[in-house]
Length: 443
Ligand SMILES: [Zn+2]
Image 1 (cartoon, rainbow, N blue to C red):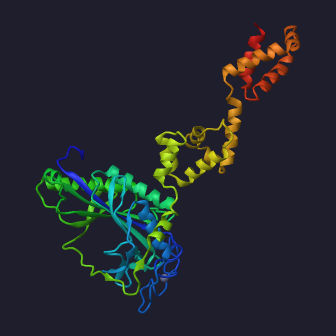
Image 2 (image 1 turned 180 degrees about the horizontal axis):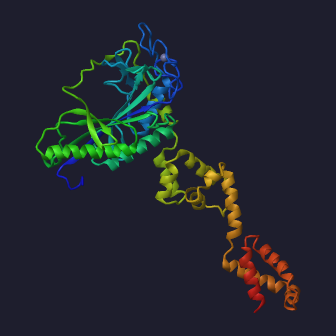
Image 3 (image 1 turned 135 degrees about the vertical axis):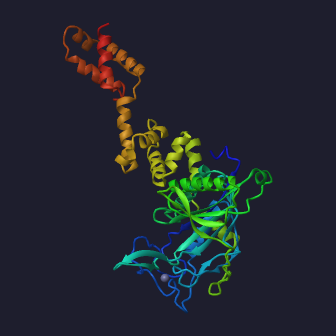
């Protein structure tokens, strides 16, 4: 549908990821706020009380730089925090400490999509709308206030929902591999916004961006993101075909109606009156310090996939499945380590039993899986030819037993089977050995 249209979707992304540091960004309150009793993890700093002074959490800065390095960003050796002003009840200071012109990370790319910047800011409190004694009211929980929130902004490089979803899944995986966030969308640890417009053929040829964009907000799953973007593209297309002008606005997604709905119209560009945060000193890094952070970056999903394909010789599908779950990827590699010196255990066997038979669920420890593989291979892994040869050799070297059998003593068959198994190091299938032995004895 989208391909046949005379319009090309132009999509840019903003991704917010809450960093799982022990404490908040500017105070020593716990940043683990999920499902905690409201307003139990607060202090004068994160409640914005007058006179309280912030102090930067270095771990959050390092996490942001790690992420930027993983995205191939350039790291600003000199950066600072700025105040972004706006009024909303969940923002106690009436400004948010964010980064404006000197973010920690600039540029970079992932899946061939350009990244504009990655910066660090504080999260806001959370509004809870409830009805108490029949009265509708809004309550504010400040547990989330000042939790470190990393924001990544991309260039409008996306033209279909598939590449958006693939990109975001990879971002989520990278955050998890880096150990900087659980990036769970249902917990709000990863939040997505998409800026969507449609370029007509003229704009497309001139490589010019449309003169409007619609911001799609509050999407909490990849599935809804896919549907919401598709619905928004359809809405814009219908309007454009009718010759209407699309207004610059923010929209949400209605899961039941499967359409987007207006949240607010942006009449003019927001004036946030940014200025440098006077209570926090700028942050300087040396290139050595940046390199030191780079050296702490573990193997990333793309590297692990490549290793699984090239070094272990598995298919792309197997590599994708294993890497998409960090715990499973770890299990797989640990199993292979334990299989060293056991040539009958191959990487393909391990992956197959994990993915197709889910044996990693049955054996929580990789050692259990390896033992199981050895058991299976004991029963199964003598070829017909090996059994034939063993049977032949046993019959030739055990003349007395063979003669006893031919004279009518059926009991010796057990003895002969044992001899064959001995020849096969116990790897013969009992039934096959028996059949082949009986057949040979009757010749
Ligand atoms: Zn606090």
